[in-house]
Image 1 (spheres, rainbow, N blue to C red):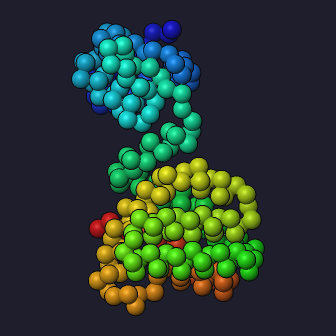
Image 2: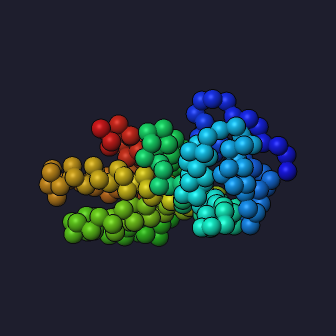
Image 3: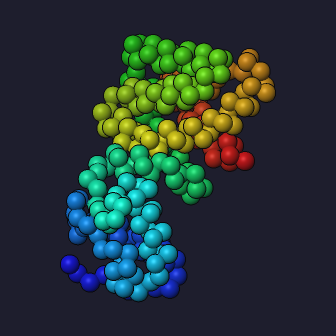
Length: 233
């Protein structure tokens, strides 16, 4: 195995994590391989044990390695979807959320624009059904179900685009988007409760905009739905 590089004396734990992750991604540490012990990594990298321990724990939390008590740390067999699902728990950071919202806009803006031109009557009926279920779940204060219908509604718009890659992309990062929707829902539902049940759900508004083939209104609503400052202040 190639000698690991020495670490610069700043953000040490992050650097250890990046190096180990790179070795895993590039296959220098293969699934099933036992990585060097913490003492060995300290010696190889020229860093302290707490820095190595923090990096290994971060890899474990993200599902890249498993720690076998009394034996050591091993690279796990994992898929891209599993990696993303594990990463979803870390998206509460402002930068991560902002970047996920940018990806959502890129996919959903174009999906909505294509859906305006391509959605069939059956597509619109399916969107209305999801809207009805979402509104009912919120009336019943079944917020877990509401978040699920919220996610499914936006995924359905991707299907309405008739571009098979948009729903594929959306589902690929689905756990990240679901987590973001869940985080925003806390403020959305609270504000709607305070305003009263006569508030028109923004998903209903989006459904009507799609039905009326109003692409500008679709984008306006989607922009409001993915506005970080409006939901997290």
